[in-house]
Length: 442
Image (cartoon, rainbow, N blue to C red; front, side):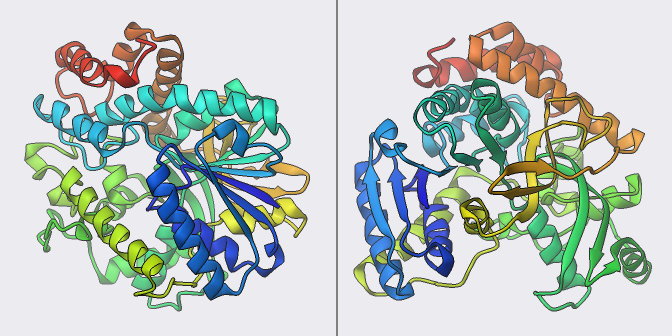
């Protein structure tokens, strides 16, 4: 296999992906090229790769380049993990809306932060899609970059003949949390039938160790009734803000009859009223707001560890992660088929969501390509929550590709996090002005 990682110097993603690839014996002897605009960071990640290869006893060829088009030549498999402007731009995604009274628990998928990030990232993902369609059209592409739905939609529009899959680990996370509350072994099989959009996907049904999950969840809640507002500890550390306390998820289950898959910090941004002063900006549901300082703290810890591995002060961690990149690469290489939750154009697998929109359901990937599994319909009450976000996603994609401020304004003014629609125009103009260097289309 010839694998390319675009954003290949990512401290968050690259060490995980490299370790997973190097510890997959069937792929040994393959090539991975790390593509990134940061030469210094590439050098650091190449050093990490060398240490990980040595520890794993693997024989991959590792290449680095800042020339994306050169790096894509001969590639079979591409993973994309990037963010235009880095944390500096994300800080503005959070701080500017905050002046309008808008709190965001993540700020990378919906809300003003999700819109702003999309407007920056969409042209770059469109250019990458065009390069792949020209240089390695037979490659399978995994997009891990947020906002995942609109970016995956962009790539499918620009390169309709390329296999593009949006990948997220939220379903893996909810499976892990359910095993814990039921005191099950970490390896206990978890299977689900899901439908929705990224970070707002719902479990139509699920099974743990082969047994139906919802009856078990009902018994658990009968013995451990949900108590809101949440009065537990919210320490606000770089680690604690990413913790899923399940309070919002379980409240949504009690209210709507289905359990959502995403972490509570993501879910809180998809509906009005959950991040307001009345809920202590999400604290009443156990949600902490993720600040740039938290992200910087997490990145510092990650960098310290990577540097320690490169220097030989610490060994690389060779345990396989819960990410599916290596499994999917192996499937494409001819090692059978891999089943996982996937974001793909709706061909009918999500029965009452718009056709061609990017929907999140179970999918199967193999040497013959990708195919979604039929999931079914969302109940009317949940459909009413999900459907408007898909319509806004279409507006956002068109706005970014064309530089149409009017479409961007329409998307922002109707977003559930915007408490006063009259604030949408000045808020949008502030975001566009603050990040003008990354928004040439406007």
